Image (cartoon, rainbow, N blue to C red; front, top):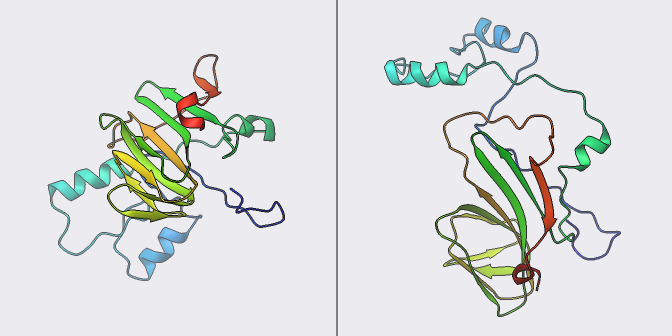
Length: 189
């Protein structure tokens, strides 16, 4: 996302669905344990007195093996890039649900309503909007019901039907699984 002139530095915003995870380099967990850290095999710190049944169940869920890495070409990656000025949206579907990234352009004074039944996270890319609170560039809000623009603004909308309690894997692209389409005319103005 560029802030004006093409010679200015831009920003890359990456959306990673699923639970946060960290994969430690070889030996890091063993060295931490040798220095006295109480942690799981995957490096999750275990606070004193927290090894009750709920904590153990949560740790077991987090101890899943990471998804295997796959080789991908630059062309493979381009299928997942949606430039802010393209007017396009990206929708990925899996057996667990869907994830959609789209752009909301608002001219000064314009109001846009969002469907409260669709889980949405919004990130202001540039400009200034209000949704019950004032937001500026790189501010994020979960589940906004509307936006009112104080100035020309661009907002990234991340909509999802994915559950919150599991890891997600979007496998190799197959026909019909990823759709890249033009934004509806109502969002393009």
